[in-house]
Image (cartoon, rainbow, N blue to C red):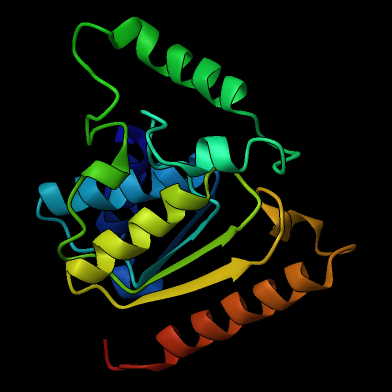
Length: 188
């Protein structure tokens, strides 16, 4: 997250307008993109034009029901693999961080001041509720949120666009959303 903030500051320093920038990430990268926006807001830096997160990992505590409900249907991720990744993340920082810490679990951080946000997730993946929680928290904070679910689809199903028509549709919808947010308020 600190590297993301440093890169963003470098872009701003080189006269790139935040209105020209868009954050996007999938899985852990989706969580990282959300954490970076939260860090920008905490540092009172301007936010990018928008953010897109695909199947974001946002709850390191794995406290939502989809971790068990979708354990057998998610062929990309398992609860054990996510738990292992969380232990690697926490191991060197166990004395300073906990699973619900908004510094590592963006679901528990603030969404106040977020730019327009696009969230997409498959309903057969263990991270389904992570994404739904982001949507709910962002909407509660007054953020303009677009949410798309892939019915009965796996983690990061959009990666399989050559094979899954729904993935192509989602990518088309993301493209349209990007076009919309970049054509709105062109004076920025």
